[in-house]
Length: 118
Image 1 (tube, rainbow, N blue to C red):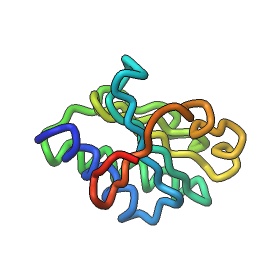
Image 2 (image 1 turned 45 degrees about the vertical axis):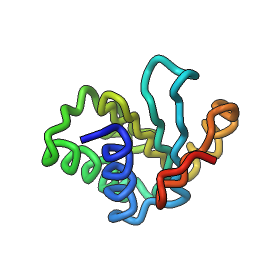
Image 3 (image 1 turned 60 degrees about the vertical axis):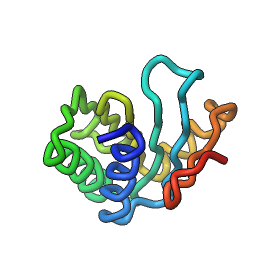
Image 4 (image 1 turned 30 degrees about the vertical axis):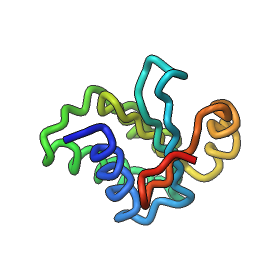
């Protein structure tokens, strides 16, 4: 499975749990951490945990190692490291505060429906 397929799998898993405002950033050449960042949010602690759990389970079902998952118990900002894709699942209030989209503003957004860079 390619990085693009992992990206699509991660986005679909978040969408399946009704994550809001899902954004994918192409971090290639910008960050050494991962090729793609997914940023999304849920409106409650339980929804944030459901989104994170779904991403982890779908990655594992498809043979990807989840290298690290942090922040799950607090459910304010859950980071899921799947190697070339890192998902950031925020509680709505924390997303506004940290504003990763602005922090990584030079990263091109990826249209997660068609997979093209924008």
